[in-house]
Image: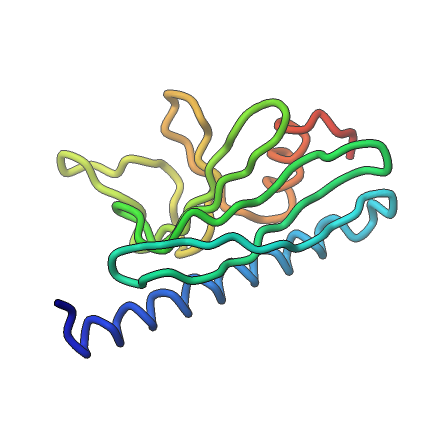
Length: 152
C-alpha cells in the first residue's frame, strides 16, 4: 500500500521527467530546424513504474521523405543511478540517452562515466569506453548521423 507522500513524490518525479523529455525534444527540433526535408512527429507511449504508476509520455519520430529514420522513446523516470532514460531507436541499433545528476553514477567509489560536469541529458555510447556525451547540438548531430547514417 502506498502512502500519500509516496504518491506525491511519484507525481513530482513523473512531472519532472516529462518536463525534461519535452525540453530535449524542443532542443532536437531546434537542432534539426535547418534540415527542411526532415519531418518530426510526436506520438505517445504508456509507461508504468512502481513509484509513478502509469502515465503517457511523448515519443519523437524523425523521418525523411523516403523513410523512417529514428524514434526517441522514453523508458521512464526511475532508472538506476539516473533520473530518466530515452531510447533512441534507429535502423542501425539502439543508443541510450540518460538524464544524469551529481556527476553521474558511481561504482566501487569511482565515476562510471567521464566528463559529466553538469546535470542533464547524456548520450552514453553503447560500447565499453564508458563515455557519456552531454546532449548539445554537436553531440546530438554526431549521434543522429551515427545511428541513421543520414547526412547532416
